[in-house]
Image (cartoon, rainbow, N blue to C red):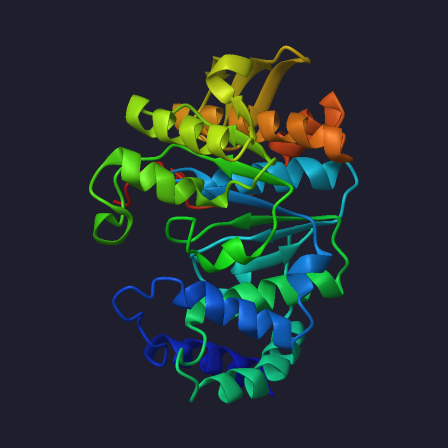
Amino acid sequence: MTPEAALAYIEGLLTRARTAAPGDERIKLRRVEDLLARIGSPERRVPTVLVAGTKGKGSTAAMMASILQTAGFRVGLYTKPHLVDYRERVRVDGVLISPGELAAVVEALVPHIEVMAPLPDGPPSYFEASVAVAFQHFARHAVDLALVEVGLGGRLDATNVADPIASVLTPVSYDHMHVLGTTLEAIAREKAGIVRHGGVVISAPQAPEALAAIIEVCARDHAELHLVHERMRWEPAGGSLYEQSFTLRSPMRDYGRLRMPLIGAHQMLNAATGVAALEALGERGFSVADNAVAAGLAALSWPARVEVVREHRDP
C-alpha cells in the first residue's frame, strides 16, 4: 500500500462509519476496542496520559511532550486536528510518522476493518482508526510515554480505550452541547470520564460548576486530584509578538523565569497545567529536572496558535 492509498483509505472511513442507535452510546468504544484487540492491543503496551478539556488540550500535551523529550524520554504525541498533513497527528519525539510507516500501519489495519464492516457496529470511524494508528505506531517505537489528546468529550471518546497513568483536564467550557449536555456540569462530567478509579488527575482552573463536577467524580472514584490553581503560581515577565516569559513555582519547586514561543495568558495557564502534571508524573517514574522544563518550553514548536504571520501589510 502506498502512503497516498493509505491516506485515501483512512479518509474513506469518514463516510462509512455507522452512527449509534438510540441508547447504544458505547458503539465508538466497542469498535476501537475490537480493532485494537485484533492487532494485539498496543494501547496496553504504552504508558499513557490522556488530556481532555475544551481549550488548550493540544498545547498542554505538546508542552509536556517537549519537556519530557528534553529530559531524555521517548515520547509519543497524538493530537488533532492536523493543520496541513494527516501525519501531524502522530509523532514520536517530535517527528511525524513517516509516509512509509503510515502506509504499513494502515495496510495492517485494513483486513481487520473490512472484517468489522458487516458486523452490527459497522467499521471503525476515521477518528477511531486514527487512534489505532497512533497506538500501534507508539508501541512499535516502544515510547516511554504517550501523550494523547482526547477528541470529543472523554467518557465515550475512542482515546478512552487507554488506561491512563494520569488524566489531565484543561479548562472546560460549552462545546458540542448536542452530544455532551447543555450545562457546564454535564459537559465536565463527560470530560471527567477519563478519570480512573484510584488514579491521578490534574485539573486546570475551572468554572465553579465544572470544578464541582470534577471534584465529585474524583471523590466517587477515589482519584487523587491536583488543582492547578492551588498548586501553581505564575506571573507574566515580559514578551513580544513572538514569545513570552513568565515565572512559575509550586510547593515542590521554584522554576524561576521561563520562556516559550507562544503568546497569550492562556498559554501560561496551559504551561502551569502541564508542569503540574509532570510533577505528579515524577512520582510514577517520569522525573524531570528544572532545566528540562525551561529548555523544553523554550524549544516548543506549536504553530498556528496566535502566531504572527506578517507584521506589515504589503503595499
